[in-house]
Image 1 (cartoon, rainbow, N blue to C red):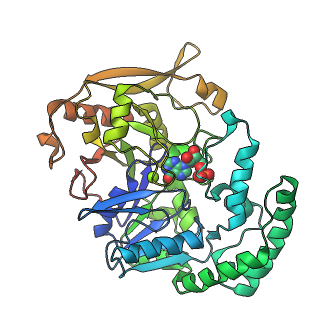
Image 2 (image 1 turned 90 degrees about the vertical axis):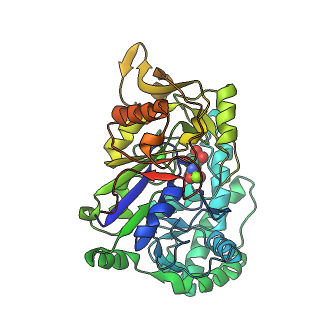
Image 3 (image 1 turned 60 degrees about the vertical axis):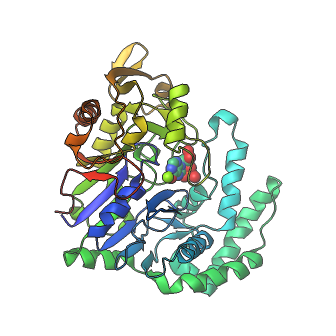
Length: 428
Ligand code: IMP
Ligand code: MG
C-alpha cells in the first residue's frame, strides 16, 4: 500500500508523532491534514526532544516532502517560530509544502477564542487550547476566511483583513475587549507572508501526482477521533475531523488511495480540556501514570486527566475511521500496576450499551463496566519482540486487540524511536 493514515483513537496525545516519525523513514511524503497549532507532537531521538505543533513529524528525515494540507488552519507566526526552533536544533535540510487552500490563523481569532470561552459558564467551557482554531474554522464556513493564497497576495490580504476587522472590532467593542488595528496586524504579518511564500503550492496536485507515481505518502492526524467535530463527544471537541474519513477532503486526494489506517492508542486513556471521560479515575495509580508517562499537555502544559483504556471508544473509532491496525503506546508506563482495568461496555440508566450516545447528557451518565487483568512488574523498555514481553503484558495487549477487534500492528515501550515494536508490514 502506498498510503498510510495515522489517526488518534482517543482524545489526542496518543503518541501519533512518534509513530509518524518512525514510519516516515519509509515514506516519500508526510502530510498534516487538519487542525493547527492546537496539536502537540513530541518526538525523541538521539537524546533530543522536539515538540512540533504545525510541522509534520517527517521533518527530521531528509528527502521527505512535508505537507501542510488544505484542511489545516495555519498560524504563520507560530509556523516560523517552529522552523526557527528546528534550525536551532540543526534541522536545516528539509522540504516543506504549504497548501494554498489552507486557512490562516490571525490575532483576532485568538482573541475570539478566549472571548467565546469566557462567556460560557464554567461547566460549559470546552477548555480549548486558546490558539484561535475554532474561530478560524468558523470564518472558513462563514466564507470570510483568509486562505494562504490570499495571505501571500499582500493586496488581497490587506483588503480581507480590513473587512474582517471592521466586523470583529464591533464585537470586541461590545464585549470590552481591546480593538485590533488592521494596519498593525498587516505590518507584522506581511513579513511572515513574504517568509512563507516560497513554500506555498497546490498540495492537492502534488500529492495526487506522487500517489499516481506510486510514491509512499503518510497522513498524520492530529488530536483524536473523540475530538472529531462530527463523531466526537460534541460539544467538547475540536473544530475539525481527525479521522481517516477526512483525509481525502482535507488533502484533495481521491478516497480510493486510502487503505491502511493505523489507529494509535495509549495503553490507558488521557484527556486534556473538559468533557465527560467515562474511565477517568484519580488516585495513587493515576498519579503514578501521570508522573511516569509525563502526562502534561505539549501545547498548554496542563496536567492530563487519566483513565483506563476504553474499548467502547476503540470500537467507535474503528467504525468511524476504518482502522486496520492498532498501535498501542506507552505500555511501559503500566509496569508495576498490580491490577489493570479494561472498559468493555457502558451502563446507562441500568442498561448495558456498546456505543457512545450522541446526547452529551446521556454520555455524562454512562458508567464503565470493567474486566480486570493482572499486571506485570518486569522492565519492558528494552523489549524488541512480542514474545519477549512478560506473559501478563502479552495478555493485556491481546485482550485490547480482541475487544477492539483490531489487529495489533505496533506497540511502544518507551519514548525513543528505537523503543518501537512493529508486528505488521505497514508500507507493503
Ligand atoms: P481547540 O482545538 O483548541 O479548539 O480545543 C478543543 C478541545 O480539543 C479542547 O478540549 C482541547 O484540550 C482539545 N485538543 C485540541 N488539540 C488537542 C491535542 O492535540 N491533544 C489533546 N487535546 C487537544
Ligand atoms: Mg499532543
